[in-house]
Image: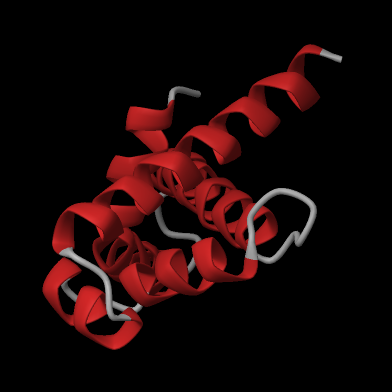
Length: 117
């Protein structure tokens, strides 16, 4: 997984959570009436849940990201803008973007190393 893919997942995290909820609701509504559609929904849901879990796992692992990087990524996951995060941490917007890029690269590198081994 590339750092760009990680960055996109972080930027789109609220949407991922929304998709997860919608797919779960669809499964409940189907209630066994259409097994083929349920299988497709389950496959999509699993991909989303794996990505969500991956992000949380790496963000909370203190051996991968610094506390500051984790806090900035978590703020982004919570939907805060770059400007809001920059103001809170007393950084420039470019500084915040650089920290996010560095964090995404660390997550990507760690993910790729663990999946190769």
